[in-house]
Length: 390
Image (tube, rainbow, N blue to C red):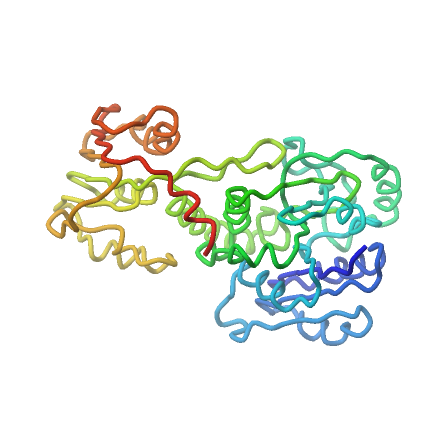
């Protein structure tokens, strides 16, 4: 197989890297693969250990130039590793993963241009299985990793030719193909960066292959913080997930969707403006992400203060999206939705979340009501492919 580069972001992940990196050197088919670690945050001695271990494990590490002051975010960290790679093929890898025997070779066998090949995750039984992973307990923490038992399991389970359609880390791609779509979108700073790039790959005509003979043990979100058992890290992750989810919805007009086997489902994207009458902070908070623009008429709160507060956690300038009726910006070529906030029901909000799907199924120019939503379609143009590159 060709030589590849493992790309691993780290955010105070020393305890995981100490198990992750040796597993790559021990179990990879090729022992000379490159390993690049991007240190985004270090309060646990990560840099010191990497500096001491770089010769033993033949690895390279890159430090955030504003280490412990301002984070790059996982997507930007991955992209830095990928750009630094001097191999044609890269593999996105998490610090809380341990590579199974020959997982690199088994994935590589299915690699082609504009194809993302995922290894299959073996995880402790903490979350429901949609069918895209294998639930087996080989330890809950890196210090408890039952390495010998996992190795035996891999010897048995890797004897399969099963391949399904889906994508989740770890995934292998050609560097050139990935960079051609602009890499990760920095709007999804610390979460949802994978869902966004998977949508864009899908729209760009990529194939997704999950190879069941290529196995990794995954400690289920320990490195990122989605595991609730690590309370301090989990609280930070929840805040970041909320912010990134809002950015994802603002961009795509819908939430993350995929099949049970993790094949992305991309709903058409339409330009929509909401005319919100008698707005409150609560209704604007709920509705703003789902529209391209929101024009409000309200004396209930100070819109400038609301926008300034939202801008603290947004990659984009919310004032470009939200403004008062009196600051009407002229013609809007797309879908107009009018709603009186005082009449909004839960069903109205449910309909807002489904508008892109509704328009995709049966939308056409004209006017109609949907509950308390007054809808006027001037033009219905799917702009999703305009979102492929960042």
